[in-house]
Image (cartoon, rainbow, N blue to C red; front, side):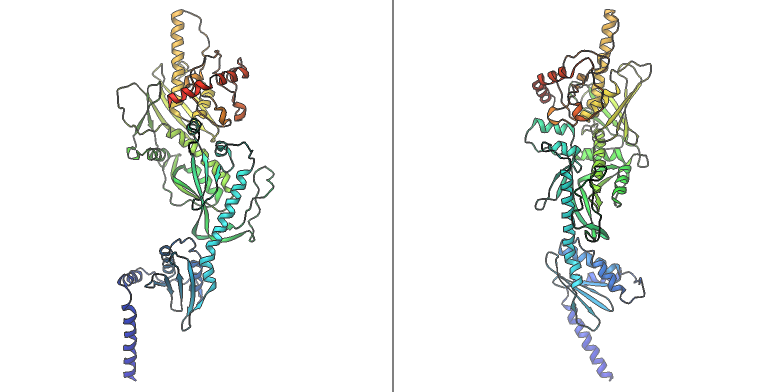
Length: 572
Protein backbone atom coordinates (compact mmCIF):
# COMPACT_ATOMS: atom_id res chain seq x y z
CA UNK A 1 0.00 0.00 0.00
CA UNK A 2 2.81 2.29 1.00
CA UNK A 3 4.72 1.55 -2.20
CA UNK A 4 1.62 2.28 -4.28
CA UNK A 5 1.17 5.62 -2.51
CA UNK A 6 4.76 6.65 -3.17
CA UNK A 7 4.42 5.63 -6.80
CA UNK A 8 1.23 7.67 -7.16
CA UNK A 9 2.85 10.75 -5.59
CA UNK A 10 5.88 10.44 -7.83
CA UNK A 11 3.66 10.11 -10.89
CA UNK A 12 1.66 13.19 -9.82
CA UNK A 13 4.79 15.24 -9.26
CA UNK A 14 6.16 14.15 -12.62
CA UNK A 15 2.94 15.34 -14.27
CA UNK A 16 3.19 18.68 -12.48
CA UNK A 17 6.80 19.12 -13.57
CA UNK A 18 5.87 18.38 -17.16
CA UNK A 19 2.94 20.79 -17.02
CA UNK A 20 4.84 23.79 -15.66
CA UNK A 21 8.03 23.03 -17.62
CA UNK A 22 6.19 24.25 -20.72
CA UNK A 23 5.22 27.57 -19.13
CA UNK A 24 7.46 30.60 -19.77
CA UNK A 25 9.43 32.12 -16.90
CA UNK A 26 7.55 35.42 -17.20
CA UNK A 27 4.25 33.67 -16.45
CA UNK A 28 5.74 31.93 -13.41
CA UNK A 29 7.15 35.22 -12.16
CA UNK A 30 3.78 36.87 -12.66
CA UNK A 31 2.11 34.08 -10.68
CA UNK A 32 4.57 34.58 -7.80
CA UNK A 33 3.88 38.33 -7.69
CA UNK A 34 0.17 37.64 -7.76
CA UNK A 35 0.37 35.22 -4.85
CA UNK A 36 2.40 37.74 -2.81
CA UNK A 37 -0.22 40.49 -3.05
CA UNK A 38 -3.29 38.20 -3.06
CA UNK A 39 -5.80 39.64 -0.54
CA UNK A 40 -7.37 37.56 2.20
CA UNK A 41 -10.74 36.29 1.17
CA UNK A 42 -13.63 37.88 3.04
CA UNK A 43 -16.87 36.12 2.11
CA UNK A 44 -19.76 38.54 1.75
CA UNK A 45 -22.33 35.88 2.61
CA UNK A 46 -22.70 32.31 3.72
CA UNK A 47 -24.03 31.30 0.32
CA UNK A 48 -21.54 28.83 -1.18
CA UNK A 49 -22.32 30.20 -4.64
CA UNK A 50 -21.42 33.81 -3.69
CA UNK A 51 -17.87 33.73 -5.14
CA UNK A 52 -19.26 32.51 -8.46
CA UNK A 53 -22.07 35.09 -8.54
CA UNK A 54 -19.79 37.94 -7.60
CA UNK A 55 -17.26 36.85 -10.21
CA UNK A 56 -19.94 36.83 -12.91
CA UNK A 57 -21.12 40.30 -11.84
CA UNK A 58 -17.61 41.68 -12.16
CA UNK A 59 -17.09 40.10 -15.56
CA UNK A 60 -20.19 41.96 -16.75
CA UNK A 61 -18.31 45.20 -16.13
CA UNK A 62 -15.49 44.50 -18.56
CA UNK A 63 -17.41 46.16 -21.38
CA UNK A 64 -14.94 48.85 -22.24
CA UNK A 65 -11.92 46.60 -22.89
CA UNK A 66 -10.87 47.48 -26.43
CA UNK A 67 -7.93 45.10 -26.92
CA UNK A 68 -6.71 41.65 -25.91
CA UNK A 69 -4.23 43.16 -23.45
CA UNK A 70 -6.78 45.40 -21.72
CA UNK A 71 -9.34 42.60 -21.55
CA UNK A 72 -6.81 40.28 -19.87
CA UNK A 73 -5.84 42.98 -17.39
CA UNK A 74 -9.45 43.65 -16.48
CA UNK A 75 -10.21 39.95 -15.97
CA UNK A 76 -7.13 39.47 -13.80
CA UNK A 77 -7.89 42.59 -11.78
CA UNK A 78 -11.46 41.54 -11.14
CA UNK A 79 -10.33 38.07 -10.13
CA UNK A 80 -7.81 39.47 -7.64
CA UNK A 81 -10.46 41.75 -6.09
CA UNK A 82 -12.56 38.70 -5.24
CA UNK A 83 -9.71 36.55 -3.97
CA UNK A 84 -9.79 34.29 -7.00
CA UNK A 85 -6.85 32.94 -8.96
CA UNK A 86 -6.27 33.72 -12.61
CA UNK A 87 -3.66 32.95 -15.20
CA UNK A 88 -3.23 33.31 -18.95
CA UNK A 89 -2.52 30.46 -21.34
CA UNK A 90 0.85 30.34 -23.18
CA UNK A 91 -0.93 31.44 -26.35
CA UNK A 92 -2.09 34.58 -24.52
CA UNK A 93 -5.68 34.25 -25.75
CA UNK A 94 -7.28 32.30 -22.89
CA UNK A 95 -7.79 33.45 -19.31
CA UNK A 96 -8.53 31.00 -16.49
CA UNK A 97 -10.31 32.25 -13.36
CA UNK A 98 -10.19 29.57 -10.65
CA UNK A 99 -11.30 28.86 -7.11
CA UNK A 100 -11.48 25.78 -4.88
CA UNK A 101 -14.94 24.91 -6.23
CA UNK A 102 -14.97 25.99 -9.89
CA UNK A 103 -13.07 27.62 -12.70
CA UNK A 104 -14.04 29.80 -15.68
CA UNK A 105 -12.26 29.57 -19.01
CA UNK A 106 -12.57 32.70 -21.19
CA UNK A 107 -11.34 32.33 -24.78
CA UNK A 108 -10.52 35.56 -26.61
CA UNK A 109 -9.66 36.64 -30.12
CA UNK A 110 -6.55 38.68 -30.95
CA UNK A 111 -8.60 41.91 -30.84
CA UNK A 112 -10.07 41.14 -27.40
CA UNK A 113 -13.51 39.93 -28.53
CA UNK A 114 -14.89 36.95 -26.64
CA UNK A 115 -15.06 33.65 -28.55
CA UNK A 116 -16.32 31.45 -25.76
CA UNK A 117 -16.73 31.21 -21.97
CA UNK A 118 -16.84 27.85 -20.16
CA UNK A 119 -17.74 27.08 -16.57
CA UNK A 120 -16.62 23.92 -14.74
CA UNK A 121 -17.31 22.77 -11.19
CA UNK A 122 -14.95 20.48 -9.29
CA UNK A 123 -14.84 17.04 -10.84
CA UNK A 124 -17.06 18.01 -13.80
CA UNK A 125 -16.25 18.67 -17.44
CA UNK A 126 -16.37 22.34 -18.54
CA UNK A 127 -19.56 23.46 -20.25
CA UNK A 128 -20.21 26.49 -22.43
CA UNK A 129 -21.83 29.30 -20.41
CA UNK A 130 -23.94 31.34 -22.81
CA UNK A 131 -24.78 33.89 -20.10
CA UNK A 132 -21.10 34.78 -19.65
CA UNK A 133 -20.57 35.09 -23.40
CA UNK A 134 -23.59 37.39 -23.61
CA UNK A 135 -22.34 39.61 -20.81
CA UNK A 136 -18.82 39.81 -22.24
CA UNK A 137 -19.78 40.39 -25.89
CA UNK A 138 -23.32 41.55 -26.45
CA UNK A 139 -23.16 44.18 -23.71
CA UNK A 140 -20.68 46.08 -25.88
CA UNK A 141 -23.36 46.24 -28.55
CA UNK A 142 -25.81 47.58 -25.97
CA UNK A 143 -23.38 50.39 -25.15
CA UNK A 144 -23.18 51.24 -28.84
CA UNK A 145 -27.00 51.31 -29.08
CA UNK A 146 -27.10 53.69 -26.11
CA UNK A 147 -24.60 56.02 -27.83
CA UNK A 148 -26.66 55.92 -31.03
CA UNK A 149 -29.84 56.87 -29.17
CA UNK A 150 -28.05 59.78 -27.48
CA UNK A 151 -26.72 61.05 -30.82
CA UNK A 152 -30.22 60.93 -32.35
CA UNK A 153 -31.65 62.94 -29.44
CA UNK A 154 -28.86 65.52 -29.66
CA UNK A 155 -29.41 65.91 -33.40
CA UNK A 156 -33.16 66.34 -32.89
CA UNK A 157 -32.51 68.99 -30.23
CA UNK A 158 -30.17 70.83 -32.61
CA UNK A 159 -33.09 71.21 -35.03
CA UNK A 160 -35.43 72.78 -32.46
CA UNK A 161 -36.18 76.47 -33.09
CA UNK A 162 -33.85 76.31 -36.09
CA UNK A 163 -34.59 78.43 -39.16
CA UNK A 164 -33.48 77.66 -42.70
CA UNK A 165 -31.16 80.65 -42.95
CA UNK A 166 -29.39 80.08 -39.62
CA UNK A 167 -25.61 80.18 -39.88
CA UNK A 168 -22.94 78.24 -38.00
CA UNK A 169 -22.03 81.10 -35.67
CA UNK A 170 -25.66 81.45 -34.57
CA UNK A 171 -25.79 77.74 -33.76
CA UNK A 172 -22.49 77.86 -31.89
CA UNK A 173 -23.50 80.74 -29.62
CA UNK A 174 -27.26 80.22 -29.30
CA UNK A 175 -28.17 76.65 -30.32
CA UNK A 176 -29.53 74.40 -27.57
CA UNK A 177 -26.65 71.99 -28.16
CA UNK A 178 -24.34 74.33 -30.06
CA UNK A 179 -23.21 73.43 -33.58
CA UNK A 180 -23.40 69.64 -33.74
CA UNK A 181 -21.32 67.62 -36.21
CA UNK A 182 -22.50 63.96 -36.42
CA UNK A 183 -20.13 61.03 -36.01
CA UNK A 184 -18.38 59.88 -39.19
CA UNK A 185 -16.22 56.76 -39.29
CA UNK A 186 -13.82 56.84 -36.37
CA UNK A 187 -14.48 60.52 -35.60
CA UNK A 188 -16.95 60.92 -32.70
CA UNK A 189 -19.85 63.35 -32.67
CA UNK A 190 -18.60 66.78 -31.61
CA UNK A 191 -20.26 69.96 -30.38
CA UNK A 192 -18.86 73.44 -31.02
CA UNK A 193 -20.27 75.58 -28.20
CA UNK A 194 -18.34 78.89 -28.15
CA UNK A 195 -16.52 81.13 -30.61
CA UNK A 196 -14.87 84.47 -29.80
CA UNK A 197 -15.51 87.79 -31.60
CA UNK A 198 -11.99 87.75 -33.05
CA UNK A 199 -12.56 84.25 -34.44
CA UNK A 200 -15.82 85.45 -36.02
CA UNK A 201 -13.99 88.40 -37.56
CA UNK A 202 -11.20 86.15 -38.82
CA UNK A 203 -13.75 83.88 -40.49
CA UNK A 204 -15.41 86.89 -42.19
CA UNK A 205 -12.16 88.29 -43.48
CA UNK A 206 -11.02 84.89 -44.77
CA UNK A 207 -14.00 83.21 -46.48
CA UNK A 208 -13.62 79.47 -46.65
CA UNK A 209 -11.17 79.36 -43.74
CA UNK A 210 -11.66 76.67 -41.08
CA UNK A 211 -11.91 78.87 -37.98
CA UNK A 212 -13.13 76.70 -35.10
CA UNK A 213 -14.25 77.62 -31.62
CA UNK A 214 -14.28 75.52 -28.46
CA UNK A 215 -15.38 71.90 -29.04
CA UNK A 216 -16.26 68.79 -27.05
CA UNK A 217 -16.64 65.18 -28.22
CA UNK A 218 -19.63 62.98 -27.37
CA UNK A 219 -18.81 59.36 -26.51
CA UNK A 220 -19.50 56.48 -24.09
CA UNK A 221 -17.12 54.88 -21.58
CA UNK A 222 -17.20 51.84 -19.31
CA UNK A 223 -17.30 52.21 -15.51
CA UNK A 224 -17.34 50.02 -12.40
CA UNK A 225 -20.94 50.96 -11.58
CA UNK A 226 -24.20 50.02 -13.25
CA UNK A 227 -26.18 52.97 -14.62
CA UNK A 228 -29.45 53.15 -16.51
CA UNK A 229 -28.81 54.29 -20.10
CA UNK A 230 -31.39 54.77 -22.86
CA UNK A 231 -31.39 52.25 -25.72
CA UNK A 232 -33.73 54.28 -27.95
CA UNK A 233 -34.31 58.04 -28.48
CA UNK A 234 -36.18 59.75 -25.63
CA UNK A 235 -36.96 63.21 -27.09
CA UNK A 236 -40.71 63.73 -27.23
CA UNK A 237 -42.18 65.16 -30.42
CA UNK A 238 -44.11 67.70 -28.33
CA UNK A 239 -42.20 70.30 -26.28
CA UNK A 240 -42.92 70.80 -22.60
CA UNK A 241 -45.21 73.47 -21.15
CA UNK A 242 -42.27 75.83 -20.73
CA UNK A 243 -41.25 75.37 -24.38
CA UNK A 244 -38.14 73.37 -23.50
CA UNK A 245 -37.51 69.87 -24.89
CA UNK A 246 -39.59 67.13 -23.26
CA UNK A 247 -38.42 63.54 -22.86
CA UNK A 248 -40.13 60.18 -22.49
CA UNK A 249 -39.78 58.43 -19.11
CA UNK A 250 -36.71 56.23 -18.80
CA UNK A 251 -38.64 52.95 -18.48
CA UNK A 252 -37.24 49.42 -18.53
CA UNK A 253 -38.46 49.06 -22.14
CA UNK A 254 -36.47 52.10 -23.27
CA UNK A 255 -33.34 51.62 -21.16
CA UNK A 256 -30.93 49.09 -19.69
CA UNK A 257 -28.53 48.92 -16.77
CA UNK A 258 -25.01 49.11 -18.18
CA UNK A 259 -21.58 49.51 -16.64
CA UNK A 260 -21.05 52.71 -18.61
CA UNK A 261 -21.95 56.37 -18.92
CA UNK A 262 -21.93 59.04 -21.63
CA UNK A 263 -19.11 61.56 -21.79
CA UNK A 264 -18.50 65.09 -23.02
CA UNK A 265 -14.72 65.05 -23.59
CA UNK A 266 -12.59 68.16 -24.03
CA UNK A 267 -9.73 68.15 -26.53
CA UNK A 268 -7.58 69.90 -23.89
CA UNK A 269 -8.18 70.13 -20.11
CA UNK A 270 -10.61 73.02 -19.52
CA UNK A 271 -10.26 75.43 -16.54
CA UNK A 272 -13.55 75.61 -14.65
CA UNK A 273 -14.54 77.29 -11.39
CA UNK A 274 -15.62 75.17 -8.45
CA UNK A 275 -19.12 76.62 -8.62
CA UNK A 276 -19.48 75.65 -12.30
CA UNK A 277 -18.25 72.13 -11.57
CA UNK A 278 -20.72 71.78 -8.69
CA UNK A 279 -23.58 73.00 -10.88
CA UNK A 280 -22.75 70.45 -13.58
CA UNK A 281 -22.54 67.64 -11.01
CA UNK A 282 -25.95 68.67 -9.68
CA UNK A 283 -27.43 68.51 -13.20
CA UNK A 284 -25.91 65.15 -14.12
CA UNK A 285 -26.03 63.48 -10.72
CA UNK A 286 -22.49 62.13 -11.26
CA UNK A 287 -19.29 63.24 -9.54
CA UNK A 288 -16.43 64.36 -11.77
CA UNK A 289 -13.44 62.48 -10.39
CA UNK A 290 -9.71 63.13 -10.52
CA UNK A 291 -9.98 66.89 -9.97
CA UNK A 292 -7.23 68.88 -8.25
CA UNK A 293 -8.27 72.28 -6.93
CA UNK A 294 -6.09 75.31 -7.65
CA UNK A 295 -6.59 79.06 -8.11
CA UNK A 296 -8.79 79.46 -11.19
CA UNK A 297 -6.75 82.36 -12.61
CA UNK A 298 -3.57 80.32 -12.33
CA UNK A 299 -5.23 77.54 -14.35
CA UNK A 300 -6.48 79.99 -16.98
CA UNK A 301 -3.03 81.53 -17.35
CA UNK A 302 -1.33 78.14 -17.64
CA UNK A 303 -3.90 76.93 -20.17
CA UNK A 304 -3.54 80.11 -22.26
CA UNK A 305 0.25 79.93 -22.29
CA UNK A 306 0.07 76.26 -23.25
CA UNK A 307 -2.05 77.18 -26.27
CA UNK A 308 0.56 79.77 -27.19
CA UNK A 309 3.36 77.23 -26.70
CA UNK A 310 4.83 79.15 -23.74
CA UNK A 311 3.52 77.40 -20.61
CA UNK A 312 6.99 77.35 -19.04
CA UNK A 313 6.84 81.15 -18.61
CA UNK A 314 4.28 81.08 -15.82
CA UNK A 315 5.20 82.02 -12.27
CA UNK A 316 2.99 83.14 -9.42
CA UNK A 317 4.14 86.76 -9.89
CA UNK A 318 4.07 86.89 -13.66
CA UNK A 319 3.36 90.05 -15.59
CA UNK A 320 2.36 90.07 -19.22
CA UNK A 321 2.99 92.74 -21.86
CA UNK A 322 0.30 93.33 -24.47
CA UNK A 323 0.91 95.49 -27.54
CA UNK A 324 -1.96 97.25 -29.33
CA UNK A 325 -1.97 99.51 -32.40
CA UNK A 326 -1.90 103.26 -31.68
CA UNK A 327 -1.54 102.76 -27.93
CA UNK A 328 1.17 102.58 -25.29
CA UNK A 329 2.10 99.03 -24.34
CA UNK A 330 0.03 97.49 -21.54
CA UNK A 331 1.47 95.53 -18.63
CA UNK A 332 -1.00 93.20 -16.86
CA UNK A 333 -0.44 91.67 -13.43
CA UNK A 334 -2.67 88.63 -12.84
CA UNK A 335 -3.61 88.23 -9.19
CA UNK A 336 -4.25 84.48 -9.01
CA UNK A 337 -5.42 84.34 -5.39
CA UNK A 338 -5.27 80.95 -3.63
CA UNK A 339 -6.85 77.54 -3.98
CA UNK A 340 -8.86 78.21 -0.80
CA UNK A 341 -10.41 81.39 -2.16
CA UNK A 342 -13.97 81.67 -3.43
CA UNK A 343 -12.64 81.46 -6.99
CA UNK A 344 -10.87 78.13 -6.92
CA UNK A 345 -11.14 75.79 -9.87
CA UNK A 346 -9.85 72.67 -11.56
CA UNK A 347 -8.88 71.37 -14.99
CA UNK A 348 -11.75 69.27 -16.34
CA UNK A 349 -11.11 66.70 -19.08
CA UNK A 350 -14.50 65.00 -19.28
CA UNK A 351 -18.06 65.40 -18.02
CA UNK A 352 -20.01 62.16 -17.38
CA UNK A 353 -23.81 62.00 -17.72
CA UNK A 354 -26.56 59.46 -18.38
CA UNK A 355 -29.47 61.40 -19.90
CA UNK A 356 -29.65 63.67 -22.99
CA UNK A 357 -31.73 66.27 -21.12
CA UNK A 358 -28.57 67.34 -19.24
CA UNK A 359 -26.70 68.45 -22.35
CA UNK A 360 -28.34 71.86 -23.13
CA UNK A 361 -27.86 73.11 -19.55
CA UNK A 362 -24.28 71.80 -19.43
CA UNK A 363 -23.55 73.59 -22.73
CA UNK A 364 -24.81 76.88 -21.24
CA UNK A 365 -22.52 76.49 -18.22
CA UNK A 366 -19.56 75.78 -20.51
CA UNK A 367 -20.35 78.86 -22.63
CA UNK A 368 -20.51 81.01 -19.51
CA UNK A 369 -17.18 79.68 -18.26
CA UNK A 370 -15.60 80.10 -21.69
CA UNK A 371 -16.68 83.75 -21.88
CA UNK A 372 -15.17 84.41 -18.44
CA UNK A 373 -11.94 82.58 -19.29
CA UNK A 374 -11.66 84.50 -22.59
CA UNK A 375 -11.63 87.87 -20.81
CA UNK A 376 -8.95 86.79 -18.34
CA UNK A 377 -6.83 85.15 -21.05
CA UNK A 378 -6.99 88.34 -23.16
CA UNK A 379 -4.58 89.85 -20.61
CA UNK A 380 -2.06 87.01 -21.05
CA UNK A 381 0.68 86.99 -23.64
CA UNK A 382 3.88 85.08 -24.23
CA UNK A 383 5.81 88.34 -23.60
CA UNK A 384 6.74 88.51 -19.92
CA UNK A 385 9.49 91.13 -20.28
CA UNK A 386 9.47 94.58 -21.82
CA UNK A 387 11.75 94.39 -24.86
CA UNK A 388 12.21 98.14 -25.13
CA UNK A 389 11.95 101.32 -23.08
CA UNK A 390 8.57 102.30 -24.52
CA UNK A 391 5.84 103.90 -22.44
CA UNK A 392 3.85 101.46 -20.30
CA UNK A 393 0.36 101.48 -18.82
CA UNK A 394 0.02 99.20 -15.78
CA UNK A 395 -3.07 97.16 -14.86
CA UNK A 396 -3.89 94.56 -12.21
CA UNK A 397 -6.57 91.92 -12.82
CA UNK A 398 -8.01 90.39 -9.64
CA UNK A 399 -11.04 88.25 -8.72
CA UNK A 400 -13.96 90.24 -7.34
CA UNK A 401 -16.80 87.86 -6.47
CA UNK A 402 -18.79 85.11 -8.15
CA UNK A 403 -18.60 85.78 -11.91
CA UNK A 404 -16.97 89.23 -11.74
CA UNK A 405 -13.41 90.54 -11.64
CA UNK A 406 -11.70 93.92 -11.24
CA UNK A 407 -9.19 95.77 -13.41
CA UNK A 408 -7.21 98.37 -11.41
CA UNK A 409 -5.20 101.18 -13.01
CA UNK A 410 -3.90 104.68 -12.32
CA UNK A 411 -6.18 107.52 -13.31
CA UNK A 412 -4.76 109.00 -16.56
CA UNK A 413 -4.91 112.59 -15.23
CA UNK A 414 -4.45 112.04 -11.48
CA UNK A 415 -2.43 109.78 -9.22
CA UNK A 416 -5.37 107.95 -7.67
CA UNK A 417 -6.42 104.41 -8.49
CA UNK A 418 -9.39 103.74 -10.73
CA UNK A 419 -11.20 100.46 -11.20
CA UNK A 420 -13.44 98.75 -13.74
CA UNK A 421 -15.54 95.86 -12.42
CA UNK A 422 -16.59 93.41 -15.13
CA UNK A 423 -19.39 90.99 -14.28
CA UNK A 424 -19.90 88.14 -16.77
CA UNK A 425 -23.57 87.47 -16.00
CA UNK A 426 -23.96 84.96 -18.83
CA UNK A 427 -22.07 84.21 -22.04
CA UNK A 428 -24.29 86.85 -23.72
CA UNK A 429 -24.62 89.47 -20.98
CA UNK A 430 -21.80 91.51 -19.46
CA UNK A 431 -22.27 94.35 -16.96
CA UNK A 432 -19.47 96.79 -16.20
CA UNK A 433 -19.03 99.64 -13.75
CA UNK A 434 -16.30 102.29 -13.56
CA UNK A 435 -15.22 103.48 -10.10
CA UNK A 436 -13.26 106.72 -9.60
CA UNK A 437 -12.24 108.94 -6.73
CA UNK A 438 -15.07 111.50 -6.43
CA UNK A 439 -12.54 114.34 -6.77
CA UNK A 440 -11.03 112.98 -9.97
CA UNK A 441 -12.22 114.13 -13.43
CA UNK A 442 -14.44 111.89 -15.53
CA UNK A 443 -12.91 109.47 -18.02
CA UNK A 444 -15.75 110.08 -20.50
CA UNK A 445 -16.75 106.37 -20.46
CA UNK A 446 -20.12 105.43 -19.00
CA UNK A 447 -20.92 102.00 -17.58
CA UNK A 448 -23.14 101.28 -20.58
CA UNK A 449 -20.38 102.19 -23.03
CA UNK A 450 -17.86 99.90 -21.30
CA UNK A 451 -20.37 97.04 -21.10
CA UNK A 452 -21.15 97.21 -24.80
CA UNK A 453 -17.46 97.47 -25.69
CA UNK A 454 -16.60 94.38 -23.60
CA UNK A 455 -19.43 92.40 -25.13
CA UNK A 456 -18.41 93.29 -28.67
CA UNK A 457 -14.70 92.50 -28.38
CA UNK A 458 -14.36 90.29 -25.25
CA UNK A 459 -10.88 91.75 -24.77
CA UNK A 460 -9.80 93.63 -21.65
CA UNK A 461 -6.81 95.38 -23.33
CA UNK A 462 -8.96 96.68 -26.21
CA UNK A 463 -11.54 98.08 -23.79
CA UNK A 464 -8.90 99.69 -21.57
CA UNK A 465 -7.37 101.32 -24.66
CA UNK A 466 -10.79 102.80 -25.46
CA UNK A 467 -11.18 104.18 -21.93
CA UNK A 468 -7.75 105.83 -22.04
CA UNK A 469 -8.47 107.33 -25.47
CA UNK A 470 -11.75 108.79 -24.25
CA UNK A 471 -9.96 110.19 -21.21
CA UNK A 472 -7.29 111.73 -23.44
CA UNK A 473 -10.00 113.50 -25.44
CA UNK A 474 -11.49 114.94 -22.24
CA UNK A 475 -8.06 116.22 -21.22
CA UNK A 476 -7.45 117.73 -24.67
CA UNK A 477 -10.86 119.42 -24.69
CA UNK A 478 -10.26 120.84 -21.22
CA UNK A 479 -6.95 122.37 -22.26
CA UNK A 480 -8.54 123.84 -25.37
CA UNK A 481 -11.35 125.35 -23.31
CA UNK A 482 -8.86 126.92 -20.91
CA UNK A 483 -6.78 128.31 -23.77
CA UNK A 484 -9.75 129.79 -25.62
CA UNK A 485 -11.58 130.81 -22.40
CA UNK A 486 -14.80 129.39 -23.77
CA UNK A 487 -17.71 128.12 -21.75
CA UNK A 488 -17.34 124.37 -21.14
CA UNK A 489 -19.66 122.11 -23.04
CA UNK A 490 -20.82 118.60 -22.04
CA UNK A 491 -18.21 115.97 -22.88
CA UNK A 492 -19.03 113.52 -25.62
CA UNK A 493 -18.20 109.85 -25.17
CA UNK A 494 -16.83 108.52 -28.45
CA UNK A 495 -17.07 104.84 -29.32
CA UNK A 496 -14.66 105.78 -32.13
CA UNK A 497 -11.94 105.80 -29.49
CA UNK A 498 -12.20 102.01 -29.59
CA UNK A 499 -11.57 102.27 -33.32
CA UNK A 500 -15.38 102.07 -33.56
CA UNK A 501 -16.71 98.77 -32.26
CA UNK A 502 -19.71 97.94 -34.41
CA UNK A 503 -21.97 94.94 -34.89
CA UNK A 504 -20.99 93.00 -38.02
CA UNK A 505 -23.97 93.00 -40.44
CA UNK A 506 -23.25 89.46 -41.59
CA UNK A 507 -23.40 87.98 -38.11
CA UNK A 508 -26.38 89.79 -36.64
CA UNK A 509 -27.24 88.45 -33.23
CA UNK A 510 -23.65 87.92 -32.14
CA UNK A 511 -20.94 89.89 -30.47
CA UNK A 512 -18.31 90.98 -32.98
CA UNK A 513 -15.35 93.30 -33.23
CA UNK A 514 -14.91 95.53 -36.27
CA UNK A 515 -12.26 98.23 -36.17
CA UNK A 516 -13.15 101.23 -38.30
CA UNK A 517 -11.78 104.59 -39.31
CA UNK A 518 -12.91 107.36 -37.01
CA UNK A 519 -16.20 108.88 -38.18
CA UNK A 520 -17.40 112.37 -37.50
CA UNK A 521 -20.65 112.20 -35.53
CA UNK A 522 -22.54 114.88 -33.56
CA UNK A 523 -21.75 115.35 -29.87
CA UNK A 524 -24.36 114.44 -27.27
CA UNK A 525 -24.38 113.87 -23.50
CA UNK A 526 -24.31 110.12 -24.11
CA UNK A 527 -21.78 108.09 -26.05
CA UNK A 528 -22.33 107.55 -29.77
CA UNK A 529 -22.73 103.89 -30.70
CA UNK A 530 -24.02 102.36 -33.88
CA UNK A 531 -27.26 100.57 -32.90
CA UNK A 532 -28.31 99.44 -36.33
CA UNK A 533 -28.23 95.83 -35.14
CA UNK A 534 -29.33 96.26 -31.52
CA UNK A 535 -32.83 94.96 -32.15
CA UNK A 536 -31.51 91.81 -33.80
CA UNK A 537 -29.16 91.29 -30.87
CA UNK A 538 -32.05 91.35 -28.44
CA UNK A 539 -30.17 93.75 -26.17
CA UNK A 540 -31.87 96.14 -23.77
CA UNK A 541 -29.22 98.79 -24.39
CA UNK A 542 -30.38 102.39 -24.59
CA UNK A 543 -29.86 104.07 -27.95
CA UNK A 544 -26.61 105.93 -27.90
CA UNK A 545 -27.64 109.19 -29.55
CA UNK A 546 -31.34 110.20 -29.46
CA UNK A 547 -30.70 113.05 -31.86
CA UNK A 548 -29.40 110.76 -34.63
CA UNK A 549 -32.04 108.70 -36.44
CA UNK A 550 -31.62 105.01 -37.17
CA UNK A 551 -31.77 105.75 -40.91
CA UNK A 552 -28.80 108.10 -40.59
CA UNK A 553 -26.81 105.49 -38.68
CA UNK A 554 -27.59 102.82 -41.26
CA UNK A 555 -26.50 105.13 -44.11
CA UNK A 556 -23.25 105.89 -42.30
CA UNK A 557 -22.65 102.16 -41.74
CA UNK A 558 -23.28 101.31 -45.40
CA UNK A 559 -21.13 104.12 -46.74
CA UNK A 560 -18.14 103.09 -44.65
CA UNK A 561 -18.25 99.30 -45.18
CA UNK A 562 -15.23 99.39 -47.52
CA UNK A 563 -13.23 101.61 -45.18
CA UNK A 564 -14.07 99.27 -42.29
CA UNK A 565 -12.58 96.27 -44.03
CA UNK A 566 -9.41 98.13 -45.00
CA UNK A 567 -8.93 99.45 -41.48
CA UNK A 568 -9.43 96.01 -39.97
CA UNK A 569 -6.80 94.47 -42.24
CA UNK A 570 -4.41 97.23 -41.31
CA UNK A 571 -4.81 96.70 -37.56
CA UNK A 572 -4.67 92.90 -37.58
